Length: 245
Image 1: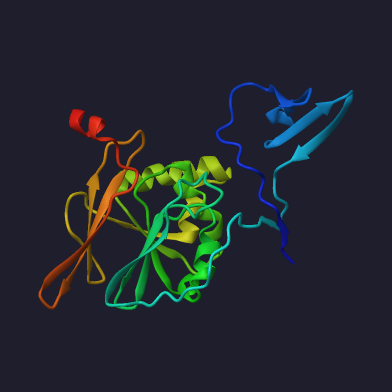
Image 2: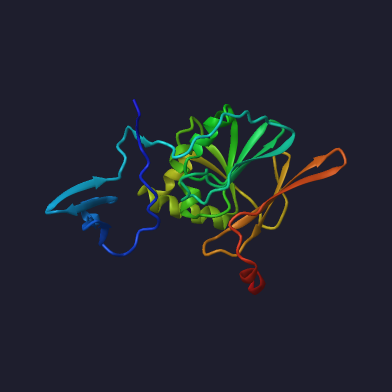
């Protein structure tokens, strides 16, 4: 049986300080990493309590938002937007899209809570054909624990620099050998700034300025009167940065 735990409140990126004030004269202290990660001590009136934010083997967080059930039809070529949040937003799903092409579903950017989103889409969770990643940010990799539960290796499409960065981040976040990444994902390299044929669907990754290796995606499919296209322009820099690029 899997136990569900209420998701902790939004904390934001952790600062370097180990002590801080929690309000009303209370104080908090981060437990030293040698005694375990994600553990805090709250002190008030000479008493203290330790809070362990780590999940047990049979625990998982409840979603902080509710999604209505909706059918995800695998049309000839269509796009389902599955979120507009930034990964830290507790009121909205993380940004991402599902590209539907001839009955196959391609997940583009899988943030935290992706399994909850796919469940709301019904059969989409079992029909997802592949996953594509543009960047190795922590937000986009927080879906890995959900995706690795699949009963098969998931085809994974990315440019070689992005894939290499993702594998490094996977090893750092999970504490596992990087080689285990390939037990769950079947990598397919995409040539940058070229149209790559993915089972009839064409996709072109284009380099995008970012602190880590990042691309944006352009998809296209042949229609009755020419091509139909979709541009997945996520995590793009400001116009000021782009002008300097």
